[in-house]
Image (cartoon, rainbow, N blue to C red; front, side, top):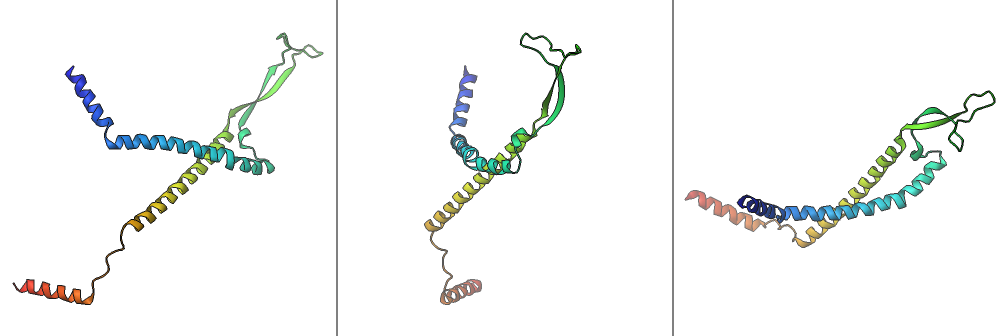
Length: 161
C-alpha cells in the first residue's frame, strides 16, 4: 500500500504543478481557437477561392491518379448482360488510386490556418508590448554633467585611499 500512496502523491504533485495546469488550459483554448480558424477557412476563405479556381477549371477535390477497370455488366438479377454475339458487355470505370487533390486542399488549409494563427499571435504580441511599455516608466534619463563630475571626484578620492 505504501508504493501506491507514494505513486499517488507523486502524481498529485505532478498534476497540480503550475506548468501542467497552464498546458491544459492552453490545449483547451487552442482546441477552441482551432475550431474558430477552421470555420473561418472552410466557411469564409475557401468558398470564394473554390469559386475562383472553378472558373479556371480547377477542382482540387477531384484530382486523382486513376486506373481504368473493366468488369462485366450485370442486370437487376445479378446475371451478366450479353450482347447479340453472346459476349458479356463490359462496364468501363475509372478507379482512383491516389487522391492527391484532397491532399492539396489540406495543404492549402494548413497554410491559411497557420497564417491566421501567425497574424493572431503577432497582434497579441504587439498589444502586449504596448501594454508593457505603458506600464513601465521611461528609461532613466542620463545623469547631468554635474552628477558625472561628482562621480569622477568620488572615484578619484577612492583611488587615493
